[in-house]
Amino acid sequence: MKTFTKRNQAWLILPVRTLLFLAAQVLIALLLLLFAGVSDWQVSAGWWPVGVALADIVCLYLLIHWYRQEGKKFFSEFRLNRKTFWKDLLVMLLSLVIGGPLSVMPNILLSNWLFGDPEATLPLFVGILPLWAVVVALILFPLGQALTEIPMYMRYILPRLEAQPGLKPWMAVGLVSLFLSLQHITAPLVFDIRFILWRALMYLPFALYVGILIRWRPRLLPFIATIHWMMNLSFVFMYLIPNIAR
Image 1 (tube, rainbow, N blue to C red):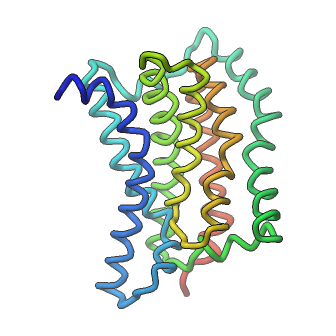
Image 2 (image 1 turned 90 degrees about the vertical axis):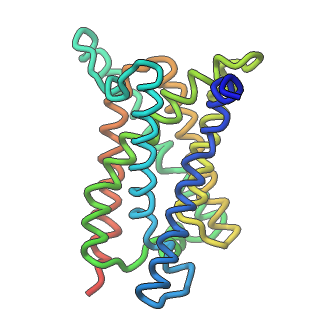
């Protein structure tokens, strides 16, 4: 049984973040029902940055544990290579020429196609939150995403999937990128097919691009993690802080 689990661990981990996001939203919905008398599932969707932060804490624990099982240190993934620092930084900056538009344009194009308006999705997943929840999101959400999302998919799962018999590297990159994109369906889960499609596909081109980049040059991870942190921090400032409950 242990041999089966170890051999198939990469496959079993693929949906973990998706399921954790869903579990966090269910937990938040239950807490809102018990302590605020709110039974509307849609309200829980507005709390998704807090739910994702909770899920990321679990993911961070799991990653540290899995690396330790293999005699490795998880945080060594973020160690900068002094010998190649400036070269890696230049590659990272040049990669933003493609990566920047890929991280934004699918979002806009899909929302226009599905909703007819790029702003139509905001009311579905940006809610009115109390100050303490926004503070939690401000501190934990960007940091948790930077530390766990891309490292889990691209530095833990991807190499172990590539080691599976009969799975070619391009197939492994495609599969991991697909699951990274699909995880957004439950962050948050909104029962609207257009919203589900939008969340499922909006990051797929960017995920593929990041997967190819990191597989080619793994030492770019610290730079990518930093950019990821800044992107999520800007989301909190742009959309959550203006929606603090008065």
